[in-house]
Image (cartoon, rainbow, N blue to C red):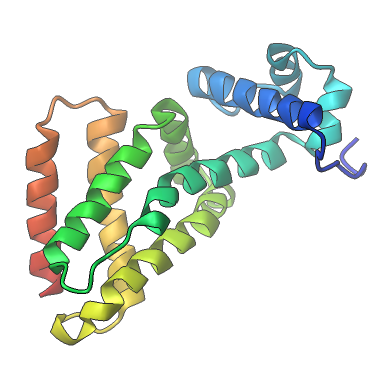
Length: 199
């Protein structure tokens, strides 16, 4: 089945069927984990045949990769739409970025916790996430670019990588592990920490 070419749905009914499969996969992988969820279970949960599953996805990993891409589209969507006025202080840009990373991780947070867990277990799964994360790193580097004359950091891409990684570590701790933290206080202090690093 893996060699058969998968189809790209065009009609509304096909698009909805593919989305049902994706929704079922997110639900099952969130509760049972990736490795404990089979393609057959996903098909059954979605109310489709296993043949239909394979008509849209080459295998479970292909489906998972698309789900990770979907998550990153959701997380980065608000960042892409963020309009930064020329006179906006960098501190507010950093705060807006951190706030959006928090909001993005609150969507399908159980599934995102599984993504983070798989990333730590295997280079192969880490690469799937890093392919998506690269866009977020570039995006934030672009947000820092207009302020480059005032920054002590020289390599914006590396700085953006460090900031995203630090921010995600905090967000994962608060959101995934449901720590009873004052989110506003966490955002304020993280903003201050990052600004101290940048300036």
